[in-house]
Length: 174
Image 1: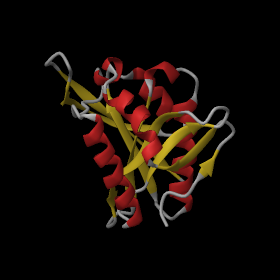
Image 2: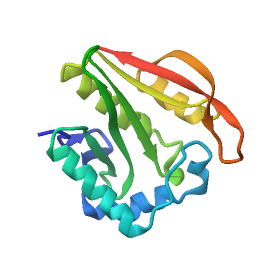
Image 3: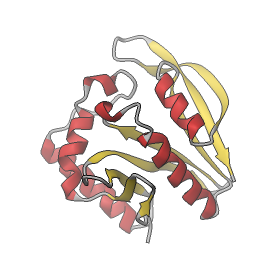
C-alpha cells in the first residue's frame, strides 16, 4: 500500500481523502500561489473528482500522494506528492504546496524532509524537486529539507503576467 501515514513533530502526512476538498479548493484559488504555480481553474465538483482520481492512483500503486495536516487542530494545509518516477535510473520527482497563510512556519520543509527521507529509505537512489526561480521561499524549503541545488534552466515557466521565468532544480540522496 502506497502513501503510508507519516507523522512528524507537528504534522500528519496521510493519504488524500474527501475531507480535503475545501482546503485543496482554497489552494487552487489562492492568487498568491498562482504567482509561482499554474493551477487549473476547477470547480469544487471537478476538484472532488480530481481527489478521487488521486486516491484511485494511490490504490493502483501509481504515485504516492499525501495531505499535509496540522497535528494540533487537524487542519489540512497542503499536499505533497510523487509527480513522476524514473524507474531506469531509480529516482522520483516530488512536488508540494502549502496554503499561503501557513508559509514561513517551516511546515513545508518539515513535510518535504519526512517524505524525501521515506522515499530514500524505500529504495530510491535520489529524490528531486524544482521551483520557479522567483519563488525564493520554495528554494529555502528544499534546502532546509536537505536538498542541494543541481542546476537552472532559463525561461521554462510561464508566469501569471505572461513573462517567463527559469526553473531551479534540486535533489537529495541518501
